[in-house]
Image 1 (cartoon, rainbow, N blue to C red):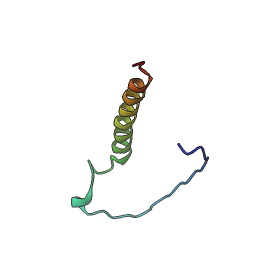
Image 2: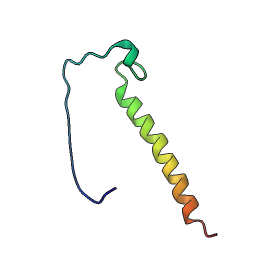
Image 3: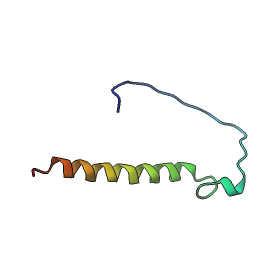
Image 4: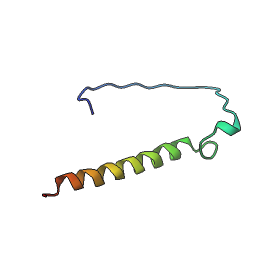
Length: 55
């Protein structure tokens, strides 16, 4: 979004997360992340379409 090109990657091995701190189902983190991004993208598209509408 800022025009810069950066890449960062992190790996975590043998991480423990208490059950009360989990978001969604265990071992479904990628699904949770892509679902969240899908909602974000759909909201952005709607706002962009409204902005392009002549008034």
